[in-house]
Length: 324
Ligand SMILES: NC(=O)C1=CN([C@@H]2O[C@H](COP(=O)(O)OP(=O)(O)OC[C@H]3O[C@@H](n4cnc5c(N)ncnc54)[C@H](O)[C@@H]3O)[C@@H](O)[C@H]2O)C=CC1
Ligand SMILES: O=C(O)C(=O)CO
Image 1 (cartoon, rainbow, N blue to C red):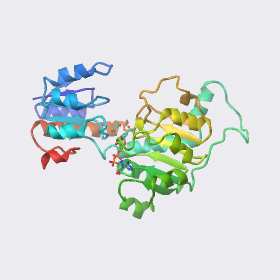
Image 2 (cartoon, rainbow, N blue to C red; image 1 turned 135 degrees about the horizontal axis):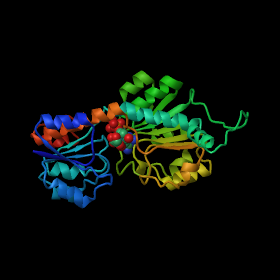
Image 3 (cartoon, protein in one colour; image 1 turned 90 degrees about the vertical axis):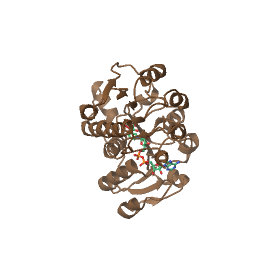
Image 4 (cartoon, rainbow, N blue to C red; image 1 turned 30 degrees about the horizontal axis):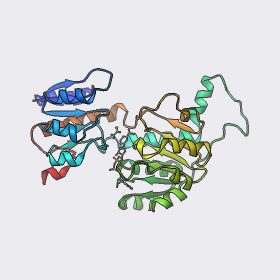
């Protein structure tokens, strides 16, 4: 039995494959493998563990329909044609829960950095531009008691809401497909329409899944409805905001600032204008990137892959319909 892994993953996951007697073939080159190379490598194995990008579309799935499992080293599965995988009865595993706190921490970190322009001031010091105490300079904004609007109050959104409530006693409003009872009871969160979320939030933090419905949701029209002091934070997926419209909204002061762990496209080009704006903080998609979380992701994704190869139900499966 063999598994192909598209990146070098933490040892804790590799050990589980050894214990299960499954041979590991890892892609060790720094560059991203091409779709043709992905297909070629998958032809020789029973399962695929995919970390990073990778387009698991209908064409790939039909070329590799012998795969007993595709295990994502991620919780987001927007790069997979789930309907086709389900039709072909290929189980898709993912790694929810274990990364919720780490990812929400990055949303929280971005929010504070933007509110106080911390990344910008750090850059100024590097450029020998230390501005001594000036009452009218280096001005950020308080977060205390402000309104946090969450788009997609699922696992990560809940952790972000909890952090903001605890640290800044923020009022929480949210737009979600369903009511989140726990957030309403424990955090006093209130479910609102998308329009109300845009109009009432001082901070909008995006935590929904990327789908046809959420793609390009934050566009010129949406930014125009937001408050001029609003801070936009996206740690979910870059295509949920329109980057040209975001730049324009920031330049025109339609909104106040933005914190991005995900960009559109990804990677963001180093000379992108957003990177030179004082009220913008950008990170290279590091939401789940802590030693502890990556270890847990390695273990969970390996457990999913091993179960799939053995023909057992995955621990965390996206397309549970295949078992019905
Ligand atoms: N920056 C990073 O490194 C990471 C990013 N992510 C992203 O975060 C996303 C969320 O992860 P979780 O919180 O674990 O997922 P989740 O499934 O627990 O939460 C997503 C929430 O979004 C809601 N939602 C989906 N479509 C919606 C719509 N059209 N309108 C309103 N609400 C909608 C769902 O009902 C759900 O409550 C992932 O799909 C992934 O794209 C996840 C982990 C790390
Ligand atoms: O889990 C995900 O969806 C990520 O984006 C990376 O952890």
